[in-house]
Length: 91
Image (cartoon, rainbow, N blue to C red):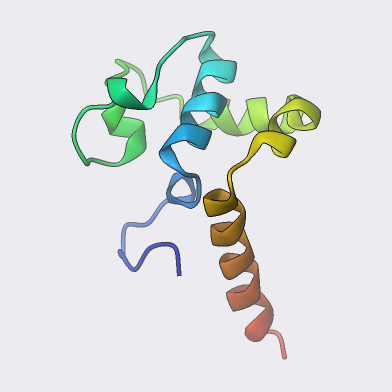
């Protein structure tokens, strides 16, 4: 599974590069993966002084036609694992 942490977040499903793309689309920034601080949760590692965690999700929904095709194999695999785990509980 993508994360075994009891504090896992949906942001952990995205590779750092993919999350940065969403973050930049949401906030109009130009962050790069190399700008992240340490190995903390990506929402903290951006170093942003705000906690508007919903904005990257909103950007993904509103700009899905341009953002979805660019998601990495890592991110897609993590989502696939998540949905497989959810589906296994339904049968």
